[in-house]
Amino acid sequence: MSVRSLALWRATTEEEPAFPRVRITADAATFYTSLGNGHFTQALNLYREQLPSVFTGQPFVCPTTDAGLRRALEQGVGSIVLRIDTPIEARRRVAHLLNACHDYKWTVDHAGSMDISPESCSIARFTQFEAMSKVVDSEALTALVRLELGAGLDHRAAATKLSKL
Figure 1 (cartoon, rainbow, N blue to C red):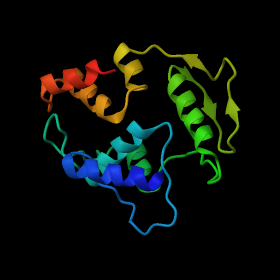
Figure 2: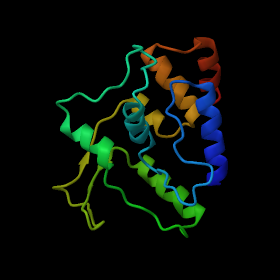
Figure 3: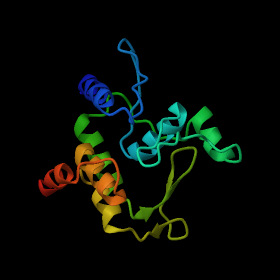
């Protein structure tokens, strides 16, 4: 599964110069992927590679005043890592739950304990666009984002992709 995913991502980056490149080498024995924060990870990758925005043409450059972003780019971000023997169906379930619960915010401490007390949680308001972005595949999401922002996409082709949802 992971080999296919990497091959698909490499093919996508060849077709889409604005997408961050795959940094995992073909002979890598171990690598990690994301189940629930792919958009966030890709945003960090845009900054790491200083790729130009498809909307403004300006490169993503970390502001010198943004210590948090600089730290995330240099050191990474806290994550929960699933064991390598976690079955694919369990991974799918975790990914689905993360996306299905995008409006319910909770906290996880450094030891991995989740705090779901009312003091730590909230039901966040979100737009229809945000809700849809959690359930569509990457191709439809690209079309949806570009339609929403009105940039970098043939509107007829995007409408065709979205009509298949």
